[in-house]
Image 1 (spheres, rainbow, N blue to C red):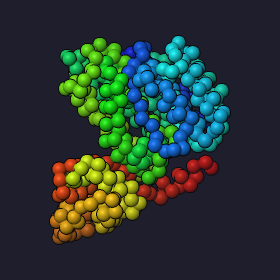
Image 2: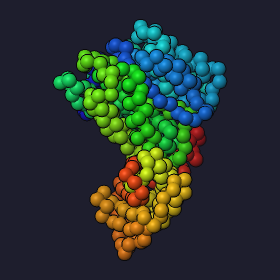
Image 3: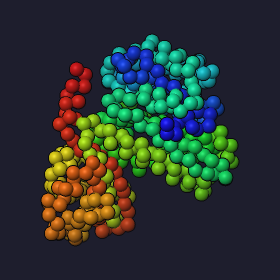
Image 4: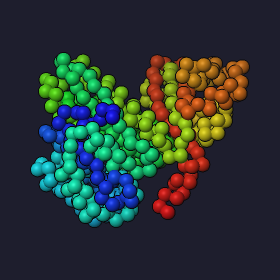
Length: 401
């Protein structure tokens, strides 16, 4: 079994089936033996779920010791009863673990607008708390318990050394549909045993999320429940990182590596998707402009359907870039397909002699890499998206039926 969140010092986990979903596990609990520096980012959707509202309050002091997540019910648009349910989740977790309620991060995912099954969730918390374990199996059970329409669990692990001490970092994620930059219907929880100041941790997480989770899309829809949280419990006993030195940079480097891995797993599992597309924009004037073009291309339904049908209609990509709201000279643009840029479609804004037949062969790959070079500056960005298939329509046309 691959390394996971339970390979991080002081981390225990479990995943239970409490009956919101018919068969799959639907309650995950992650616990740190010591209070941990913590940070989190949330959906930018103005319509947000009750657990998001509560977790925004609990994260303010930058200390969290437990994360509790239910799947199958979003606890969104559920009114006062939903708010009481989210609070009950935090209170029950705190009671079972003997920690302050404010040390609990709460998350939910699933169907919006359904009455929240508070009693079932509380039973699941009690069961999971009693079975908490640091075995790898426990980490994988937690990873499975947060899934909804996902077809597989999303886990990742990395390690590195700080001051000669091995640091372990691992994470889990869920997401398959309603995936779009600015979080999407996705949850991700990362644990690490490094000692780091909460304010620096918050800065690191926001910086990394902008480059990873906020650069993925499946269908252009953002959700009510999105959350990425990280806890660092300091149990590696390294000297606390409290300045932006080389140790901090190394931490950010590995956090970004882990988040890219989890982000790509989410896109690869996009509802009904058959392809993973990586979009690279280079030679932009600023990184923000490069990101804006990536987002616009990756969200285009015309681009996505062309990928699904292996249709070599590259003009859709160029046209999407042109409506991104970024100024650039079309007559300077180069467009490439392939990992090694083996197919060049545009050179200085002019079509090359490479045929659409060659491009069609390239598009048959399960992973398609598209590189747009603006030749306007030195900034760049990368993002990931899926294609748009008949199956996506079926899944979402029948979501509640």
